[in-house]
Length: 350
Image (cartoon, rainbow, N blue to C red; front, side):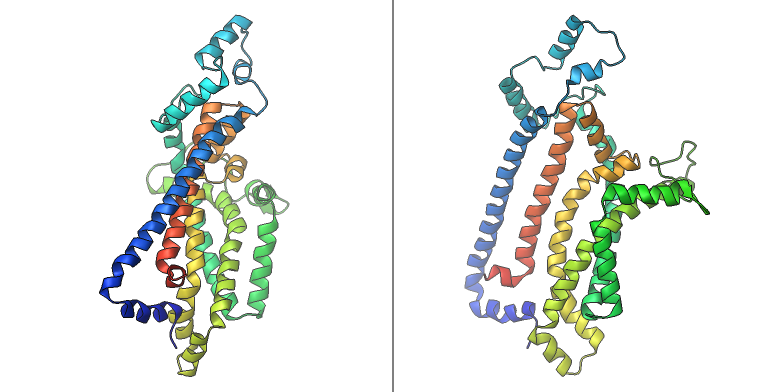
């Protein structure tokens, strides 16, 4: 008895070289169908992005004029300058045309191109959310593998219970708690880590600067990991439990293979497939970062930028950041479907 991946090889060989072209054609058709669905989803996002944000309360012109003595005529002039005096349908077609030309407009508040603002903020977001994703995947896969292989053990019950507890905790509450305990300090516990921004005001140079940024990352990154890693743990644990019950694992053990070899060489590679799909899906969210975490810790990323845009409201900035985040998620979800279709022969033959 062999693994599911190995079991698919004889069937592929029996088909003969002449049958490779239909297989490749089917894979191409599958990829094209997914790409078509992704383009349709992006089109719907573009339409929804424009109209949904127009439903938010507040007048951006009046909000931008706070603290300045502007007459109604000046407010009307500013509204014309921003193009908000045009009919809504005209604004929509202009937005669609600009988006297709990759022109996301100019921010009302910052008076700078939205694409430039996104370019400045995407680096800190990728640093924070990317680091959190790597740690969460590594921790979740390791704990999920051990918990699934030793199903019912103390480690399984403890790790699963703790991950579910952290997963159910609101992100903002956990972030504030960590900030209070390890940032500000409470009782005999002194504040250890900085909790505002990405660097100190008097940030040093060289390697000391890297350490300064790393210290600022500890609390927001810990918040992200604590809330997210449970997904990888539970999926990896569930997948491994399903693989352990398969015949090929029983046969491998009956052949006298060591338990570690059975786990590493047979069970874990097959159990990783759903986790790989989830990782691709989460990569899309890395671009958007975590609005809540970045807002709590004033991390200068896309999440914080989106929050600032909603506060005004800055329609062009909201549209640009939201569009980037959703397109990244759609593209990564599509890649996840295609990669899963390629990696798992059981899906190809279904």
